[in-house]
Image (cartoon, rainbow, N blue to C red; front, side, top):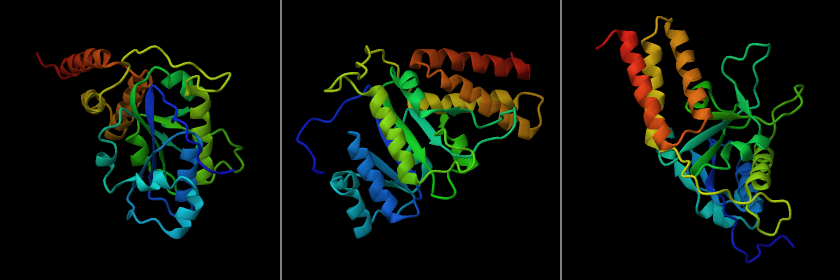
Amino acid sequence: MGTNSAIPHPTWNCELVIVLVEPQFEGNVGAVARCLRNFGLHELRILRHDGVFSDETRNRAKHAQGVLDDCQIHQEWDACFEDISLVIGTSGKREHGDKVLFRHFLLPAEMGERLSQVEGKVAIVFGPEGMGLTQEELRACDLMLTIPTWEGYPILNLSHTVAIVCYEWFQTLLPNVGRQHALPKTVHTERILNPQLKREIRRRCMEIANASAKRDDQKISAADTLTRVILRGIPTDDEAHKLLGLLDAATKAMKGDD
């Protein structure tokens, strides 16, 4: 009971990376490592951490010591996500009222439908306990995800949040390996967005927003909206190149360039 079995890890079309940003409690890091192991995952990255794991962390990880041993430690956001095709930020904070300006959320149960044809590395990012990801960090993410909790007390413990997300990932994307109702691995579609192309889309969206007649604060919001609408469709590299051409042409037309 409670030990690792000598069976192969499950494989998905895309590789899930769990990223913790400045975790505050050592026990949570160990519990997160255990969550990954529970659901056949292995890649953990921590942003802005000293890379030293205490006895408490090790004890909470139980038989997931390998996840901690292989954990990548980064101090800078860009370095942490340099090889990531899709970055999904998490938040329990919601906008109130009918008009949603920024927090357009994906639910964990929707990940299978959205990501079943994606290949490459997908990072799901979790902020510090009690604070969560900052607005700036969420803006750097391609999609946002939330867990539908009761509005009276919506914020979950960090390790509980990771467990729910990993469970949904396991349920919706697991190939048919010993589970009767698992989804089969989808046909290879080369549906991967090169990280450099993704950064170029962000840059071009900002350019077209800057070329508009809007106020500076509205330009940022417009660029965010355009970027999220494009990335929500998870375009292929070929589609991304065509979109970049259209964005460039639109920007020149708005500026009056030949």
